[in-house]
Length: 320
Ligand code: ADP
Ligand code: F6P
Image (tube, rainbow, N blue to C red; front, top):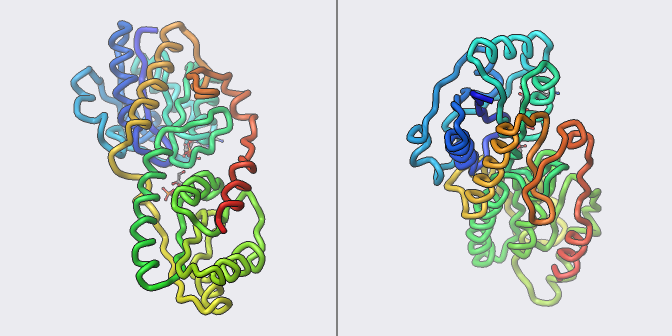
């Protein structure tokens, strides 16, 4: 391939910039031209594309967000939208594309591949909810941000002898909730993957622990479960413990990426370019059993992620 392009799509994630940098520099190092597509598939449809060189991606390895901007583009889900994007690729001489994003973005990459534009997906989402990989860019940074925030909430919960119910991100996935819940010593962790019983899993548990002398509590709730205000009220009514709800929100999507996210993003981005340089497309890059690899895009999209019940049960067992 002579010319490749890179885009970021879906929700942004800290480390996407580090991945863009790796893609651009790997492409140049392998003798290819590299272009940047702005605002994900929307920029591909509109032809919002810039030439990138090694200096265009200086000073971004440490920055949150994405220098290429990101967008959700409903038009790309239509045949017409995809055909417009293919036209742009032909006009710009784009031979292959690295798509940094989540499962939705990979579906778009699959559609482009079907229309003759080889694409390689790089997993980028704070949710870590992509089935084909054990790690997605942004997960570590988002969790560290959430952990820091919950640590601060814990200070005030402890001073006032309160229960704090904290919502972390994850509309369909409880991975951020599970690991931040463990890291912050939550009494209960509520995730969309597991049904919960308010009385048994939250109220009775708090009451039991209360009897052992504990006076402040943290409950971590994934966005997909929601209802933190109501939950705090119910806990207060049932236990008599003054309770507060906090929604952490988009603070988890920003900030400087951690070491893990910068290194993973560099490795995953580099591997994507290695594939395109060999003329291989229609793949997604993966991290499985501590190794960078890749998977057929169809197989990857057909996989189902299994929630780690051992980890969840461990968290429940030690929150006493
Ligand atoms: P993520 O990539 O983080 O999962 P989205 O699900 O919002 O985020 O998808 C990002 C973009 O990918 C969408 O706005 C759309 O342009 C494209 N996309 C999503 N799903 C599909 C699909 N089924 N077919 C084609 N393109 C899709
Ligand atoms: O996919 C990442 C994520 O942050 C989810 O956890 C969340 O549900 C969603 O994006 C929110 O997206 P937005 O606010 O950008 O629409």
